[in-house]
Image (cartoon, rainbow, N blue to C red; front, top):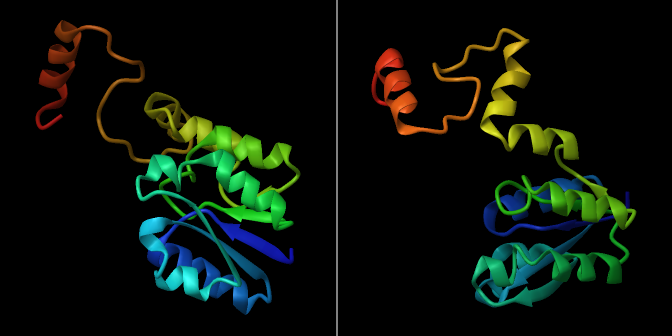
Length: 154
């Protein structure tokens, strides 16, 4: 891989970029207008403003991020944590564009994004789990009964 776009901000973006540069991989930053002078923006090999400070207008704007990725011939996108790292639609969009999503697989994002599915997925490995149910609760009476059985706080 020769070039990676880091779809995140702040210290996490800077740490990812430092590692990429140690690997001789070029870095692309995307940033909001509020982060124009941030260290991660200045550290990147290339940096592109993708919107206003509200995350929905910048760091969560997948179409703008993809536009930058495609226009810069990015080969990989690292989502950091938070923001888009748990967004399977974004991971699918990246893969469909022929770009490597540097994060969990789409399947893992989907499983771990649902508390019940995540609990069932790890239960078979004898991972200690907090007490609870294996199905979604649909009424308050059942919820109160389960809470009384497991104990508070819930």
